[in-house]
Image (cartoon, rainbow over all chains, first blue to last red; front, top):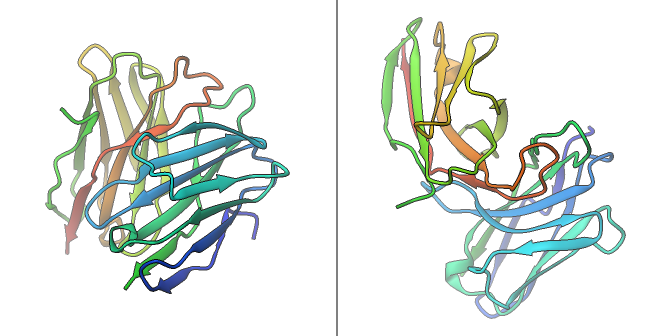
Length: 116
Length: 116
């Protein structure tokens, strides 16, 4: 399977715990995006990378959230001291990022986080 | 005003008919526009993108763009029960559409139901 993969697919945690999610983009894609989606809403942008550089981070993102893409391949999203409001589907997407691209983004299956 | 607006629906269309989904956006500088389909509990799937005024056809799907009116639409011909899903309109708010690295802003989606 050469699509975007995410791990884990589901995560249940207690309030106050830290969680980390992983995303593996499509292999030739150099842009990687993180989104959060809650029920009845469209995906909400969190942050994105071009290769290993984090180029933009949403102003809505609290400092409890951090993302890395250390070697320009896979990325991790960490949420520290989780709150019940963090419960959502966390989506990763990747895009080609080269000439001829209009930034078509392809999504992974998502990680569903439930904070108890 | 939301950056990308869609009627939440549900939009109910008889099988075999044309389904028409609409979207408006607020950023006049937007360059590329996307339609994603999302089945319940799944991640968004890219079905069309468009960047020039006019129509773009792909199989049973036609995307229409009118930048002067800041309006994007998606037509689904010969609607099938398998088309029942939420359709997300998304807009690339980058400075330039070609090779843009900017985030995509999503609408909240229109729920489409195809009745047999």
